[in-house]
Length: 166
Picture: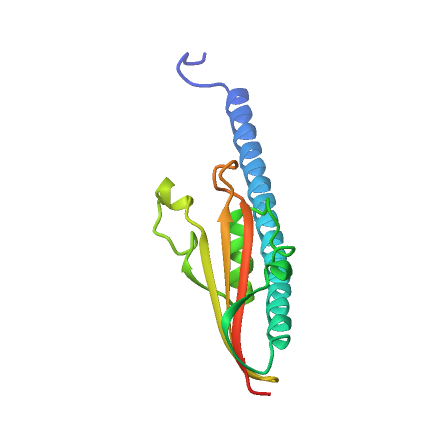
């Protein structure tokens, strides 16, 4: 005769099966989420290399001597970080390209104030070059999209100036 307070063997087996099934589904969800993030990371690396090449091509196009005024190179960088790009991905692309941040969501204290999400990201790159000999300074500004609650890029602006000795 069974005690009415103890569960049956069938109830225990069913409970264990449900538990194992939910653990397996959780592992699949984690694996797919990690896979999409690593795909974004690979995309950011490739686009970052393209942004770096575009900036270096703009530097090679500068006239010999000092270029103290900023030259607009938005037409070279904007197609690589177009409007609608997720903001975190855009910042990661600039990071992969070798830019340092004056202000960025990546470097901001967490949890981030909603007012800070409205601020544009300013990224700067300074590099010495051996061929052609000189120095470049480039700046990229990411403007957040107000209609998308500041989670995507509305516009990308880029400028460059430098010194070329040869």
